[in-house]
Image (cartoon, rainbow, N blue to C red; front, side, top):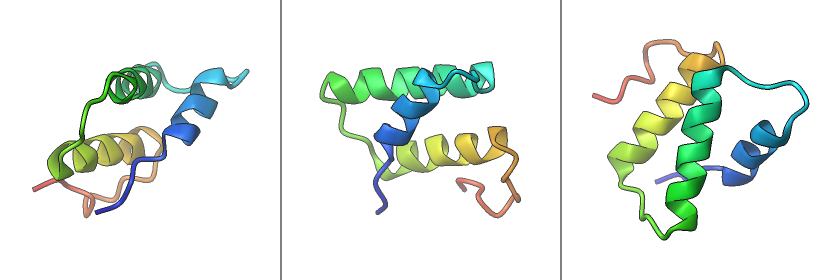
Length: 66
């Protein structure tokens, strides 16, 4: 299981060049959940990372969270 990089999410939110608004919302929600003690399941982590990849232009279809 990989670990979600919340430092990268915080950096994207603090960036002077705002990311895609949906990416920004996903990062904000992910950080808030984690800051409140949420334990991510493998499925949730995979969905989050697939969404990031899709919104960042790196989605290949093989990232699909089957």
